[in-house]
Image (cartoon, rainbow, N blue to C red; front, top):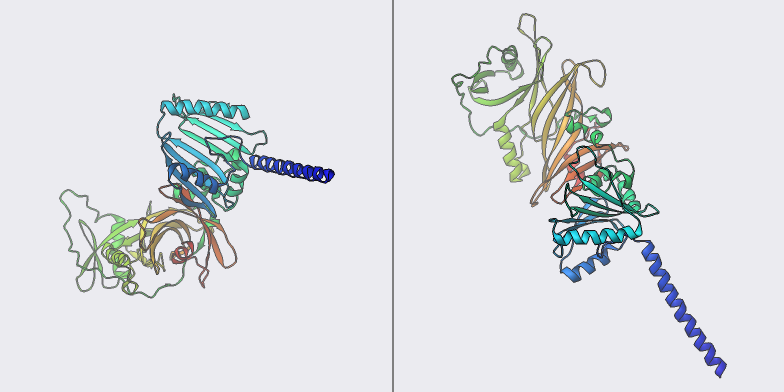
Length: 487
């Protein structure tokens, strides 16, 4: 009987020991999966759900979260102990990939807390302070990195400040996985100051990605898509709601009537708009065969030469106003088209008109506006000259309105658009307080479609999305489909 009790006692002790050892081992595994660098109760690698529950118990607040990359959230909360903003990047597994704290001021409490936190981090591994770099305004940065390179911590000080203005904890492995998950993910992380090159390797070249908007020209042929060859919508043209009377030129205003390009345009208008003429005054008007005058805005390519040919942009502000109002009204049955137009004209040696053509810059948009015409001696498609026309096109769907800024490549004699590149977008969903907007980058060409990625700026930071837009029957990428597929 005694031996039986002894064995039961020994078994019970063994169970307790195993439970204790298991709990200790589980705790060890948990700690190994989290950063050794701790900021209050925040640490990279921890569960965001558990972190949020703990924060709610203490503050009675919840994090506000937004999607920054597919299945990745960027969450933030204002705190009041040391007043500032806590931002947390949460991966698809609900793990904290990065934590930031941005104090509102360099208060004495923040200075003391930063010293305490830095001392604790130094116990894990000594931090290293970067040497000052030219042009950084005297910013000081101290970095800590775990022995295995997985966990990082950063304190960034402004010039001559005794308290950090930015504290950052990171999981390098998780950040690298997020950065490689979609084409522009590394850019979105970098623009949100969530990564450095040491965390994710070489960042996607920002200048290369945004070359079309930063440098004003879509130079990479890999970004080009086919232009629509036929109207995608059968809508009537917009008509202005009132007559624009011709206004006399202001006293002292420069007289452009003798300009060779203006003379050439005067001669081209009756050809491209039969029965009409160009009238000059304090601006320009096209007068039709009934005598109705309509103000127009005219632009032209840089370095225009009448003998080589001039590419003009013709815009009808009265028609645009009607088209925009009907878009805002949201009644598709009342939509009409008010597209900007291109006119190509060339003069003979004696100045007479040699030829004139209307060039459709966009066969799809409800409304469009040309912002610039750039002329180049050689096309990317060969040795013939080309023009690159930057314009913004407006579209509407079932529950949205939006626009895409394009650059069209125009070549040939007579000129015609042969390709175009999407550059930027703006999308307003029905009932939304503000539109979504950002850059568009062509990142792939799957069969039958175009893969596009966005880089968007919101009030809370930057985000990116990647989606595939099917081409139309003629192989063209349509602006309306971009909006339908991206939101």
